[in-house]
Amino acid sequence: MKRVMKNMSRIGDDVAEIMAGHSSDAVGIAVDNAKEVMNKGYWTGNLAREISSEMTTKLSFMLISGAYYSGFLEYGTRYMAAEPFMQPTVKIIKNKLRDDFSELLSG
Image (cartoon, rainbow, N blue to C red; front, side):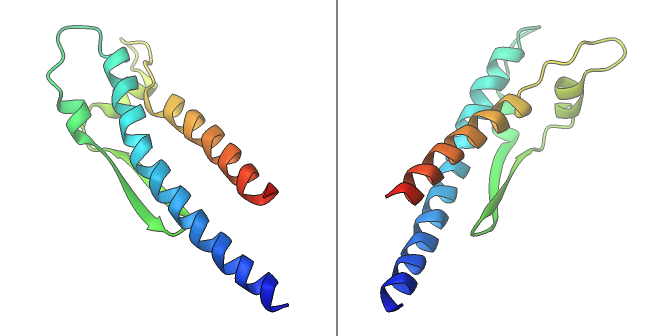
């Protein structure tokens, strides 16, 4: 029983480490996706500077874009088609997390 509890403790630490790593990876992926969709006009870098992540618990984090126009890009307007950059990032990170957790649990 002690061995099981020790392994559970280790897995908890590993999960926290995985989440923290993917939190910072998510920012880089979101910035790359933002650069791809910002193809009108010119790139000032403001959108990239406004993207950040914040660990909310050991098991979760928020990916945030503070640029006021992020929602317009992500969902579009009646005059502009949506050019999502956050949703593709979420899908990529979700797949990476699934793979890492599967690897962690399998051995």
